[in-house]
Length: 252
Figure 1 (tube, rainbow, N blue to C red):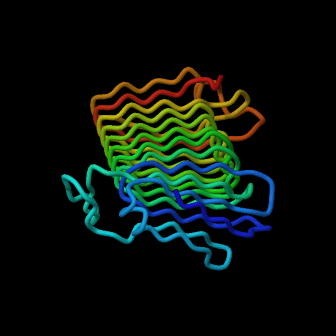
Figure 2: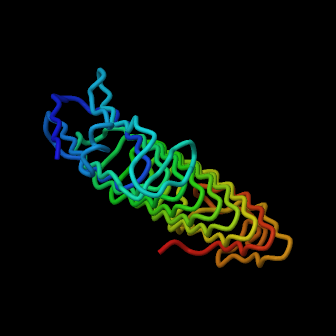
C-alpha cells in the first residue's frame, strides 16, 4: 500500500484520474499532503502519483486491468479496482475523472470539477467557489456550494443543501432537489426528472417555467400574486421540463 507524502504549505490542486474503485479526500490544517493508493499490485504499479508545482496528480495509465472487461469512456475496466485516499490542505481544489469510482469529500474545497460515468459523489463540507459536475448515471450529494454550480446528468440524481451562486442543471431523467437556492439566478432543464427548489424567506421570485405534461406549483407567492416585489433579494428562476414536475418550496 504505497504512501506518498508531499510538502504543501499552501492549498493545492488535486487531480485524480482512475477508472473504477473509490476516491476519498479529506482536507485538514498542516503543511503536508498524503496520498495512499490501494488495490491489486499490478494496478497500483500502473498508477502515477507525483507533485507538479502546486498540483498533486494521481493518474492510472494502464489500459488493461485484469479480469472481465467492459469499455466505458475510453477506459478498459476490469473487475479489480483502485482505492485512492488523499489528505490535502483546506481550501484546495479537486478534479476527478472516473468511469465508475465513487467519490467522497470531507472538509473545505476551493473548487470542484467532476467527470464520471456511474460513480456517485458525496461532499460533506463546503465548496468555497464553483463546482462543475458531469455524469451519466452517478448520483451527487453536496452540502454547500458558495459559488456557482453547474450540473449535467443523464439519469443521476442531484441533492444540494445550499447554493449561494448561480445554478444551472440539465438532466434527462435524474431528479434535482435544492434545499436552498440563495443566489440570484437558477436555470433548470429536464425531460422526465422532477425538480424541487427551496427558496429562503424574504426572497422575491421572478419565475418563467413551463412543462409539457408535468405539474408546476409554488408554495411561495410570486411577484404578480402579491401585487409587486417586496424589499429584499430577487431570485430569477427559469425552468423547462417535458414530463417532470417542477416545485418551488420554502427552504427549511
